[in-house]
Image (cartoon, rainbow, N blue to C red; front, side, top):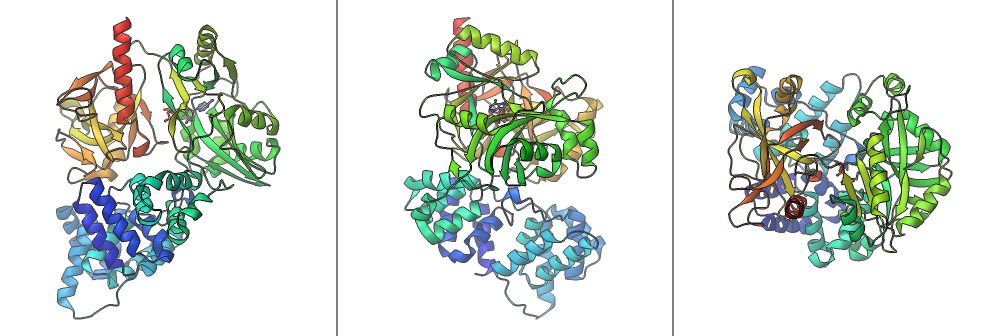
Length: 588
Ligand code: ATP
């Protein structure tokens, strides 16, 4: 398959903002792709060469990419920089340079194929160590020399992490169901396969080669992250109890980093909430798993919490960020020790537990964990008594937890991989304000700061995600809650996501000074949710010609780097919160 063909699809996808058209285009693309290439096409379409948990990145910053352009097209760096300033998109720069070259020479290069592009990109990502930069530049410029202008545009965008076709995972799943699994009606089977392996390329390959039958055979595998089960939210223990059938397993909601821990003999993997491989950040946790999980093979879940080693008190979630560093991890391990609280078992010695009810999973977890002072089970009570649960909630808060996660213990309380269902419901501390708890929003725009804030942003335009429409809907402009240090670093943090026009998966009536690709997630709190003629969140759902906005929003100081844009709070959660708030006002 020619790479040019893929680029033609990219161009069409880029031009449409309708999700249906985008899905149909993907269906055509997948149908015409040879099954042996389909995984590669799926990765490339997402601007990747493998699923995120493999952790391979191109490692090509803008400067390096410009050097590759110099190499490929024989132009001085100054000209390339100048062009970049003018066009603001390295992809367009490459396209322009490539078309100029075409006019100058009659040289006809061999056409690039998808396999060739993929394997070179793979080489680029895998090149590391001494001389890696030069090697990467050579590989990229080699590709560019054979690329047509359109191909050059997308190659450059891909390697610099700016392909941005705006295709959510869920749209790819829809397209796969339509192309290979007998239609959208079978989408749950495709989605289940994805939830169990977290690898869209693999799902696509099996779908294309083996159809529905192959997809049905997907099982949990050690070493492959499972998409995490998530919780709904309610604001009182009474409401939660009635939703869960009058009784629930109530557990402390630890405020740390979610970890999915896999063990196979001596081999250990730790995956984050976003399913990145974070094994190397936690050599201590690896050891705990090796020593204290009494099974040959297991997948368990828990929360890693930073603690003060002198007092054993829990420390805020941010302290774990010290573990993000690449070097000196041993030192960080000593300075910032952690404790693990286990709360689920998904697989043990050949047995997939995801379809077992929670009490059974918890029992197995208790059997295979040897508790120590750094590796233990989450605090839990089973209760049907509102007052008892409220006392347990207060204890959790007292200990530095965020509240409780209350879990169904009925016979249908399976592990719902990848879903935010009503089998787990979180109960967090209510604030004085009417808005019960913070939400996670995606930064999509910036308003230039004035006066004291000159040179940084005065406010950020923030959005929640609407998975049904596949778009980000704005919910507020937030300018409070930022410290001077936050304000100083904001432009740098956001710079890589700047785009020259409104991303097509952003729905906004406001026009900020700068648009950002939806990528960075922050936590905000406000006084209440109100109806708004300006913000597009849940437009028309509660009232005609109105959306929902956060009143008096403030940044809580928490960057949710453990969340991607599609993990932000969703529109339907906001609608639910708005309705709960109304109920609360009525009963006050
Ligand atoms: P939040 O911002 O509330 O952490 P989230 O979207 O990351 O939200 P939710 O599914 O809404 O996640 O809430 C459950 C989260 O709470 C889990 O992802 C996990 O990290 C954390 N957690 C802490 N203690 C527990 C527990 N005992 N059981 C389940 N999850 C727990």
